[in-house]
Image (cartoon, rainbow, N blue to C red; front, side):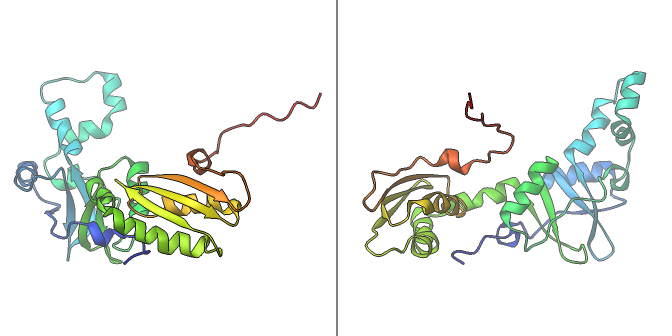
Length: 241
């Protein structure tokens, strides 16, 4: 629906390869190869997610296969060494698994993945039963939106609502996800607000504004600096001498 943020259920993969706690090392590798996936949710009972096994969990077995780690390595990588000797999914899995819900917005899911430095999230219902899986690639699907679809949403959700002043004429052009607004506005103080709202529209790659205030000089436009977070930036105070 236009104007409504996409959610995980819009882009997730519904058919998910999964394993049980007792799945063996070779069964896990074979299933990953057959399904061309890099991780598998671990389920129990009626499909409740209790963990996840990724390629990273399997690699220590090969890494330490023919080596004798020194004392420093043993202390620093206890978890990896334990996985090198693991035989089943229960011993290999990361638990509890980091999961998400079907109604989570794509932005929220992206933040979760970025903070945890993971590539995918099992999608579960309120009972932690597996519903699907969402990957980084799935979250990028919003950037495949048609330019005219993005332009229509910007006109309806931003221009019409925020800049509907009499006599204003604002043209909205979108090319490869870059939104350009050209025209005149009654209150130029609203331009930075409009810029933030446009950038929040899903599928927008960047913005370029060329807006004049009525009776004012050309106001413009490259608002990228205003849109970026300023936390941690210390501005020098005026010289009071």
